[in-house]
Image (cartoon, rainbow, N blue to C red; front, side, top):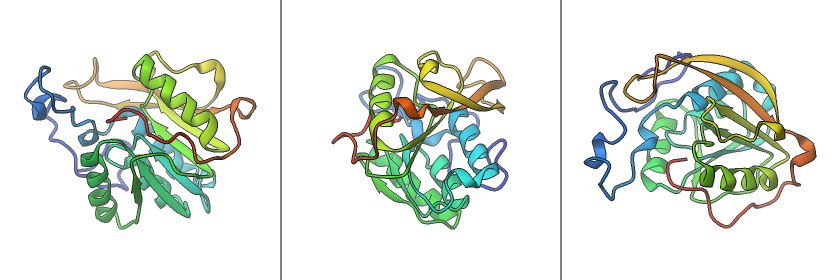
Length: 208
């Protein structure tokens, strides 16, 4: 399936009519929602930005944090990243990353926890206060550069970031409150970043 703004990529995603909780049996199910089966606007915008600005990742090692379908990591690899590791705590998401990477003719490693890298990319991960706190800690310690795609869900601490670009991303009404979401690309300010390291021993919540 092609993704809005990304005609270069082909992903295995849920059908347009599918809603987030359809695959889990409803809100009361113990099964985690299949976040990985949708292309979220933060990831779409960030993937577009990397493809348009390959110098951000070309020749560098990259971690795709809360990878979901692998959309951003695939774009990073297409943009010339030397090595990409998709990180997600949901095994189903990591399996989807492998399938989608093969579908797009690239190779991406997978991991359940953050590994050392020169760049961390994260699309649409600031969607709740607890998850945002975890993600921010990872971004500030895991890499020299951290790039985020965020559609304004209200939990990104903008004062710690500099805005790089803005995209209007077509979205599904079954998932969002409209047809388009204005999504911004942000870079963590270097003064708030820690030196590159292995990061925390565990990744953020499943579905990031």
